[in-house]
Length: 155
Image 1 (cartoon, rainbow, N blue to C red):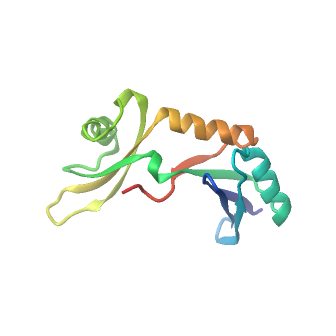
Image 2 (tube, helix red, strand yellow; image 1 turned 180 degrees about the vertical axis):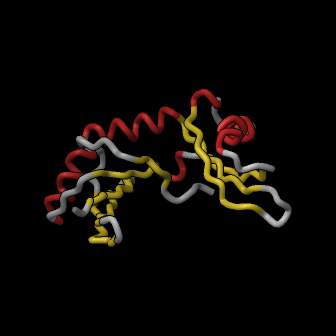
């Protein structure tokens, strides 16, 4: 049975969405949608309007924080072991943060190894408050996302 995933990009003026159908063997994009948001409008009504306007339904939702809500750095590290990275990345990123480490959510992805043997690690941090606000807006729309990712990265 196919699974329909709705990927949301919640912007201040536009709600963008992609509907993807996944089966055991395939994935295909069923549609790309955009809905203009009213100033001060709530996400719940915008999401309902998008669903009605395009006649879409979904089984699960993934969402993205705006890139400007996060700080990111590419860190060269001499290892790629997940356990060691879990311990190291937050402290390597800390000096680059405009807020306290304990007030942020940190995640990372190993991008690969360079010619010098160092592993390039994309480290991202977002303020907990920004993540809470994003999740609260989704909850007001009756959405509990399976995943919160990051839209295009801030410069």
